[in-house]
Picture 1 (cartoon, one colour):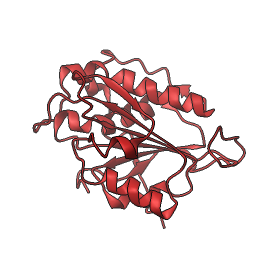
Picture 2 (cartoon, rainbow, N blue to C red):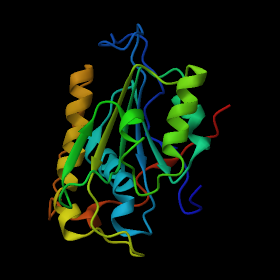
Picture 3 (tube, rainbow, N blue to C red):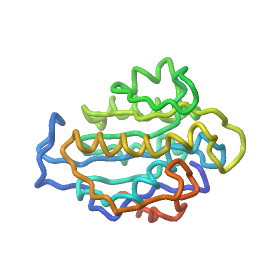
Picture 4 (cartoon, one colour):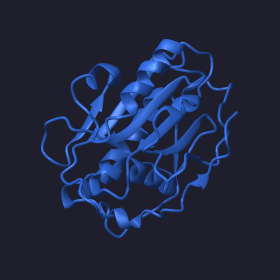
Length: 209
């Protein structure tokens, strides 16, 4: 686990049983938006910065929980339980040009060959969640091709310019699921500048039992 990051949530309750789920196999929506990455390694932290940006700019539904998973591995398993959908946001090496945003519908299969920069953790978590029955039918990986993974707090220019697009893709996925998010009318000076993201925008999550 990244000592500089803890799993965290938005101010939304963890589930909304009065909302209808689309193709989830459940009668209610309980969506996890999970940002992964190490913010100390430049583009490797884009997943975390994306979910921070998401919460800064939007009010989520009661059916959505936003979690900063940092570089956690198997510790993420409890967060997968009883979900109707999981949206994972991460830096992903897909062989494309730096800054390219990718939507992957079958993350377990994709990660067998392609990887996120911090490969150790996510494939194992998905595999064990599937074995234990904790992995929902609907898991989507929204990734962006990193350029630099060296020590540093700033994103590369190519990744920073597409950070907004990555956030918009999360919003679009939520819309497909049937969840409408409300804009907070956040208007960054530079739409691609990760410095507009507050590192304290997500409250620390209480330990799940």
